[in-house]
Image (tube, rainbow, N blue to C red; front, top):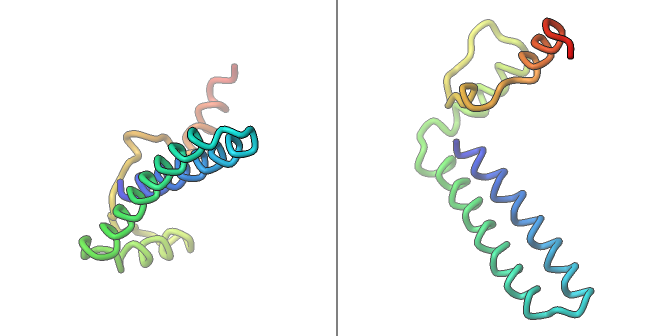
Length: 102
């Protein structure tokens, strides 16, 4: 879940910074300043989640190892956190699309 938080925080950071620069170009400095503050808050959220992965979670060194094993299609996987019940994989969606064409 920490990776989802990191990437969501970074996504929102860059979206808000883009909006900030857009508003600066339009001449709305006050709105741009508020967007920059909000983007800083999301960047802080992403950095806290990153520190959670690195400092607090003792399994951090295993995350890299688990990703390496998964990349070479190793016969077993190290459990590092499962969100498959929330987000379906692309392979499952492709199989469903083959089975039930629209």
